[in-house]
Length: 59
Image (cartoon, rainbow, N blue to C red; front, side):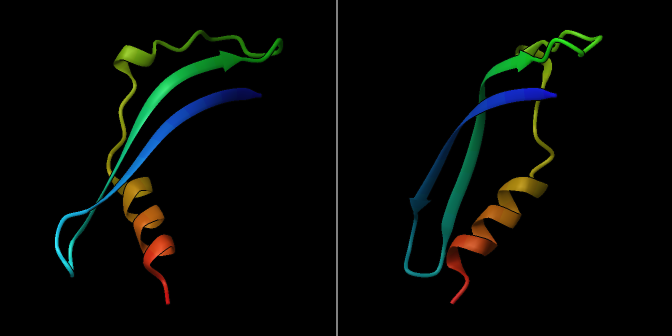
């Protein structure tokens, strides 16, 4: 198991445009994790941000 801490910013740009950004702050690998994770080399493809924005803006 891996535990992670994310900073999520939701910014209203205009009446119809909202920007969602996510920053990986910290990664804590579990005892059974064989790999270490370098948070400086980990990035999002944007899929999570889009799903989060859709969820937040869902009416």
